[in-house]
Image 1 (tube, rainbow, N blue to C red):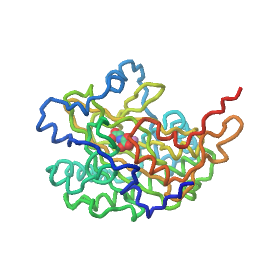
Image 2 (cartoon, rainbow, N blue to C red):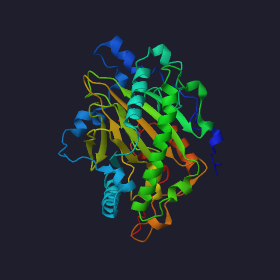
Image 3 (tube, helix red, strand yellow):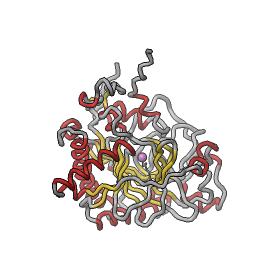
Image 4 (cartoon, rainbow, N blue to C red):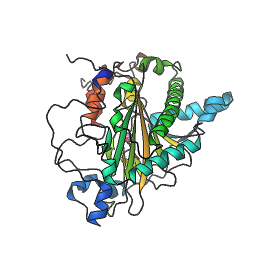
Length: 377
Ligand code: OGA
Ligand code: NI
């Protein structure tokens, strides 16, 4: 039996890998553009089946993900509240994604985090590499989820930080340049944390559960942040900005750069559906934890990012998850004879370790917890 993981194991900072790994050369995508002109190194060129243009070419879908007005949930009248809760429930069941407007977070703060993030990515590469993401880890500047020399790379530069609990922080990875970077991250992460708590309580209500059920269960929730910068790509048809995956969190909050092009796509009924940015909205998605807790009723949808020929794109992503000590499994309210149990119980720290020590591979990571369907006739 494996021992449970505690926050002291610092799994976000230094996941335990089974073997020493050789990730080969990982080119910095922004630097590539300067040196290689229009030539795309082979390591970024996807196998035909994975290429974005092919996978979306048959898309008849013009629908977009639901927009939830948080002010209606926070202070709407009874009817408004009821209507919005139903919409929330339908979004989580059908899409696993929604956009939230009137979220109450100061728009200046959203602008500010975007500004410091862009300033950071525009620094000379030597400056950014003062905060290196070590191979096989997920904090600092570089590319996460690369574990072997022959793995394809994403057309993306990342910068990631563990935020809560404090024990997952690595102070050496907190930039001193741009000067306002770290302060802004602190303020932003506090506001996003409040939003996650509010959203989780409405998600609980939308399931007919007590509003505080997740907060009580999660303990001191783990919070981490990743900034993804996608430079323009001369051949967006050949590469992916970010490989298909579902998020290992309970809830993810994604801020898209103001005025950026479409880039995020969700897999729905085998079709990649682009998320059209909505002004001042935040994109929210259900992660693997909520899928397991609701026994699959709310979906942790597979998603990916694609690139653009002339335009860059920024996303600022917050992952909110239970404390590593917590045991997770389908809640008894979500299981009955029509909804047989689909996932086993597991320690969330073990799952996080599993998540960060495997490459992004669609929804495969959640096989960790799947109970095979009963095949008996
Ligand atoms: C992520 C993610 C999508 C994007 O960071 O987990 O899904 O558009 N990002 O950057
Ligand atoms: Ni994601």
